[in-house]
Length: 258
Ligand SMILES: C[S@@+](CC[C@H](N)C(=O)[O-])C[C@H]1O[C@@H](n2cnc3c(N)ncnc32)[C@H](O)[C@@H]1O
Image (cartoon, rainbow, N blue to C red; front, top):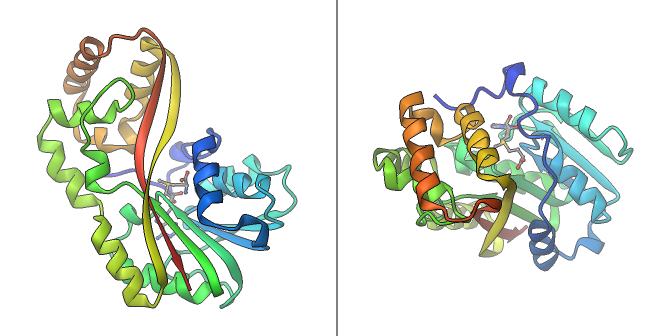
């Protein structure tokens, strides 16, 4: 079973980081952000990317999420930002007005969604003509890249190959995403790759602590405590640096225009 987004215990999971600089630069390359007046972030989690869009100069940002517990944290996290508002709603049916937004972001949402068509159709409805749709997620290819001192996630699959199938099952591949976007009517669909810093761990111990806390919200929920100990030992042996371990994740971003 994956993370329960509606459980209060998990409500801070998506509000305690800041958007990485590489993310901000990638979005600025894809979207003329100075022309965006109204942005929407669906599956906004704790509002990290609502804040980032506002900091990038977007005058009005709306965040939508289907977890009331997570939205409460998002409101707290963004309380200093008077131009950000939040709304409870589902990616398939947000209940927001049609043809209203210049930019729609869906980051780390689509691997929780089976019916891409329904999700993309709602996105198309919400955007103004010529509006930009940014979908960001990890494909199986991104996740299964080999492990090294920055791509820690790669070690999970090396040590526990049974996780490979699980990861492939829960993620959409790039071609499926592109075809679904086009099917719904989006044009100028492009796909780019991004290495984003997930976290800088000051010491190996910090990294291991972080891995132990990840079990409720990542592919690591598939392994038991003994296997987690084994994984940590394996990573300890595989990584030769002791301090400032820069952990990165590889992502895919699809840009499409209505
Ligand atoms: C992995 S988190 C990503 C949060 C944020 N976008 C980020 O990148 O930090 C996925 C978020 O999508 C929300 N979510 C999942 N399925 C959803 C749906 N069908 N409609 C709206 N929100 C959904 C979850 O509650 C959660 O906050």
